[in-house]
Image 1 (cartoon, one colour):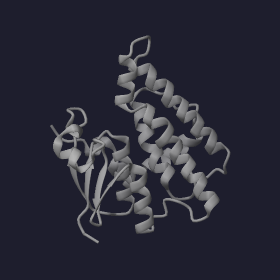
Image 2 (spheres, helix red, strand yellow):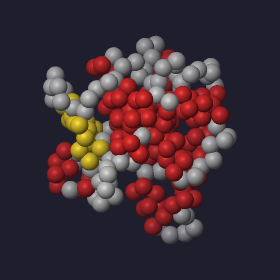
Image 3 (tube, helix red, strand yellow):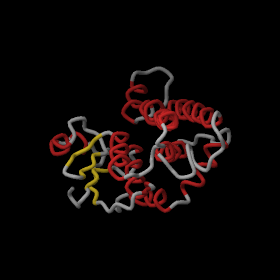
Image 4 (spheres, helix red, strand yellow):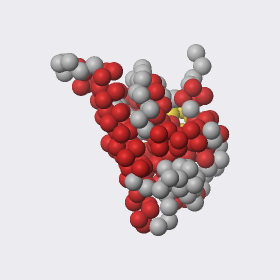
Length: 212
């Protein structure tokens, strides 16, 4: 395995934020290559050669070039014994369901390129209205899923795992768009514990935003 790790990153990307948290939880040192989504760096010839989807994150590790944040997180879990997922199949399924509720249901429709396209089609849709509607809808469902299980320190255990890694970046976006989080006490309690951990705090967009 190669020693150096390189993360192709954008400071405000939810998906890249997830990978930063995971690397921090594992105590892995890594370098970053900033890909500015605001200026279209993701569509540059150089970046498309790295990831033909024109997306971040991309993680270069162990001689591999990995894309898609959930695939990256599961690779790290499997190769570093991270404990991001429980060992029992039923518990793993629930943990994945929680993570997927954010990463595959809520975040994709709140992706800026999706929201901007929806608004560009005309009608009464606005960016703020779109984000408030879909983020709140996603968090409502997530709160319900949490409420079906036992009260735990984190989403699916007594240590942060895959679902927590997905939840915290989504809550960053929720606050950014002014979503009222008071209806979601279970996830708010989990989030309060998570953000108090150094691994989560160090991955926060405000901590990694390029200096201008």
